[in-house]
Length: 285
Image (tube, rainbow, N blue to C red; front, side):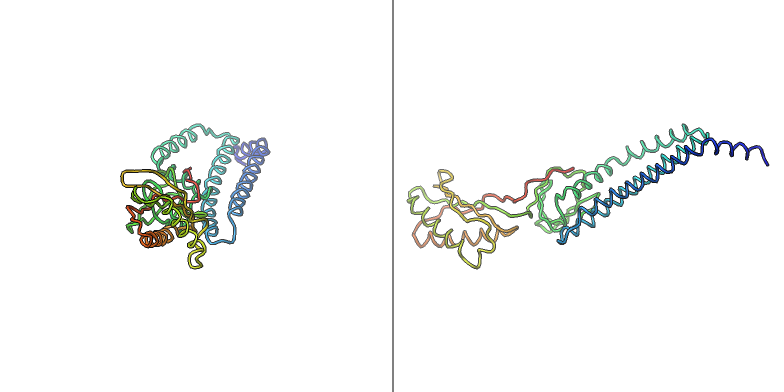
């Protein structure tokens, strides 16, 4: 037999156990990675529709992590086997390192998008169908990938935002919504009488069977908010089911206007003050 054959037989005989250990460790690492990514998908499973969408996104994310992890395990195992067989792997490692650095610098924005997208899905910051405020845009989420988030804003425009640019996010579709409504009456009017009218309007509104299902708390009269040149500002607060605050506030303003007119109290200004969501603003990954 050729001498080279005997040489390789001796190398395999001497290095075989170490090569076998390397292969076994690679298999074990791959199984652990599979178990971790499968566990990630299991944690996202529930019966609600939104959670089912999150499960699909998490499954995609887990597949990406698993594929990348397996590639790294195979590369390291292959290089270790070559080293055990006596090949010089330093040039191969140098070329691979340079290629990785070049790819990393060229795709740094893409990598940032993917990392942020990973945390958006993992931390359940928002899902498809949620109304969010992000980057001075307010809109309903239509599509989410690891690279970008697509929302439809109030003007009907479809806005695509790279996940790497998403910083502070306010989710307006979680738990409940809240609004403050101010009513300004002339300074000459009796504040006590105006407050009593507002209390009655709010009380009747709370027990109205057509509107009570949309209410979580209130509406309630908070009292005098401030004194201005235009008059006395009286403030009310209402907490509603998600995204019902505008409808409820319109009806409340209508009733307040009618009640004050019947009492011959002029209204200088009645306005929406602010919108607050029940969920706290979520930070990007």
